[in-house]
Image (cartoon, rainbow, N blue to C red; front, side, top):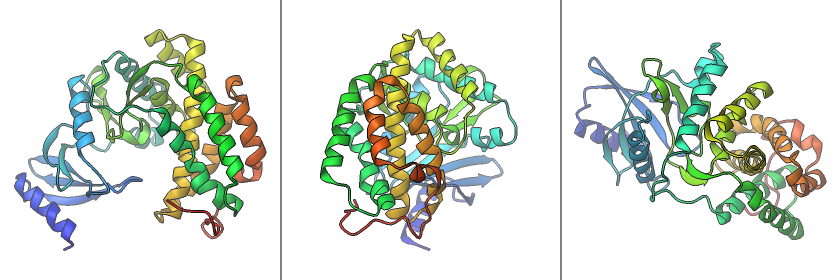
Length: 341
């Protein structure tokens, strides 16, 4: 038994679940992993977030806020903040992703998820939430130049090209912020939503992996839901859900749609960098297959007239052939002189 496995068993014992059968659940792109505890009296889930790579305190803070709003975040049943373990209510296996793959109604599931976002936009932002500030926004988009661009180009990023890229994003920041600043889940997509059919209203939407929540533009979570890096969302459904959100919140449509496009371009540019890093640094090749879809989302976002200058940068420096075919692990490598982080 590894040291971490021993610590997990000690935590489970201390929480009174020592007699439960332990079953691994799917992990995610972070260093977190999850296990399900099963016994005759019921089930629970343990988040294993090993320090110093992970910190459970933001998760606990956001969980308290979301449950305080009446939403179905998993109830915290116990925690060891120092060791990085949290015992959670088990919300089950009916993820949006699984149900949609089985033929569930997209309109019902996405509609409920959008209704929750509309309600969340009315809530006071907890003071404990970090702000999605300009420095972070710019740092995130530069992940494309730190990882994916040099691996595709097989050369380091020229200094002048990076400076131009950063300057264009700085000019886009006012457009990005043209939607209201609200509580943002930050990873609000079908893998992190659970359908709880035995509950009513907004409580039917179970929320997972919200530890990265921030104070940020209202459009961000809607982009996360509708511009999914792993799943094609029909254009007509996307438009219907944007209209549904606007009707529920009263946001000025032109401002919100401009923010939506800029937020989408920023988020998807970050994802391009993150998916490259997951292979180049972390040895996780499975994300490379989604790069063509994410490039397509970036193109869609940059079609907004207010982002024409940024679109020009991508047209000059990102050949179409890079965007259409998923790179192979054999060729997608950082060249000499491109510093990994």
